[in-house]
Amino acid sequence: MEPTARLAGFFAAHAIWSVSDGETLVTFVGSETSDGHREIDRFVTDESVTRAREHLLENPQHVARAVLAFDGYVDAPDAKTAAIRLEAREYGLEARSFEIVVPYRNAKSRVGLAVYRPKLLNVPPGLNDCGSLLDAFWAGVGSHEVASKVWNAHADQSR
Image (cartoon, rainbow, N blue to C red; front, side, top):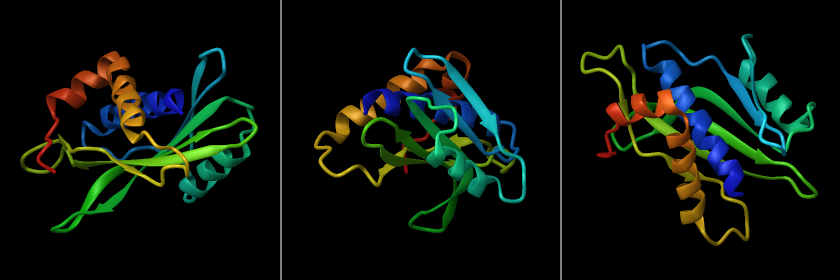
């Protein structure tokens, strides 16, 4: 699942870059073929997350892996926090998936953008090494040359 985690990291960085000016993220599914070709399909409708999730589950382009990214929230100790929510899926004989949530503070706040520590959720049963999944995720974040600079400039690991 490491290639899928790398893809999730790449598109998480892309999503953070997209919200770095204070705008809401346009829901998208980023995908990768077995030979490494990547594409983004954007969903701009009232039901964009539902439509994008259907796209992720149906895999109409028959890709090797894909990541749904959308703007949402996550419960934090003091209140709900804005978050990029990522649903990563690896296709094959047996499809497997996991989620990563990247909490952030909106760039339009009086103190500006902050990117908080990602949280791994819903890991597939039998996956014993979440550390390798997170390592692959971080490698993916770093592989997006422009977006990783935005992420690193605004990283706040206090949460």
